[in-house]
Image (tube, rainbow, N blue to C red; front, side, top):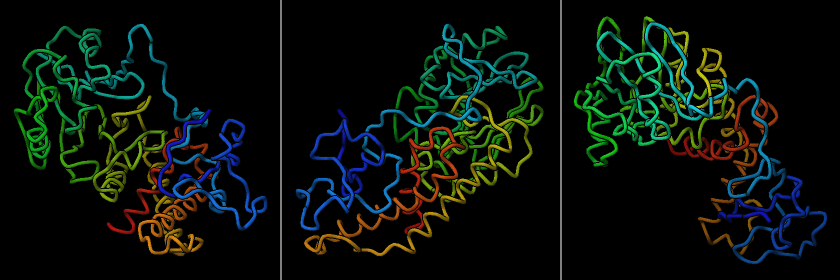
Length: 363
């Protein structure tokens, strides 16, 4: 049986369109307008008997899905050794990327130590073993890409007392959070900071709020590697709501900034593989299409059209119905082109359309 979380107005039954009606209780099954008498109505507060027009086959938020779209080969990365639980990728001249298939971090080996960039709690306990594959040097420095716990919350498992480097906004947020799993930075900077250790270099720079305040660019110029976390997702649909970006258009601008910089290998902090300039161009193209689709839907959808007259005195209901129909059109517009190009397209396309229409209306 399907588990359905009913959200206001958007969760009309679309199970018939998804070909899964046989698993759904009769009370939430969809039927077409031609099958339903005009006088038939749903119970108040329940999904409508007749769905929105042109409801996409991509299931909306809150509807359990039997099988998601297959991940395209272009999104896949090398396999993870299950015995180790991580994959180590040599990026050149002492720089390595580590991933367990969903999160990514880096470390840089120099003559007297190791610099770690991020410690995701999903595999931070295994980072010492990954480092030990290439050096016996101790961890002397840790760079925080930003303040979010899913990227740096494994810091205590690294041991020792390394120097912790972060942008000053990250320090502010971590002081507020007071989380023992995220020790406070000991070195901070405002716009730029160059870490020189044993002839190896990392250039750290801040380009404003996008994903969140303090999220930095980490460049290894000799290795031609750029790491920016939670902004570009090579081969994949970005995490929901532009990876919960605080500033949607700021995050989009940073995608363009990343594409304009000189590097050969991109590390995004997530997904199964590193990225290329072509990957960044694809995400920029998707964002342009998303903005255009949401913008057109906003301008061509009429508020209140089709709303039950008894609900016209409920401004929340009228406006939510308008936004839901905008998002239905947005998803419909994007799906033919993008559903086979991005891994996890069907998982987060509804989130992206909702976020974009909101950004266009109020930002």
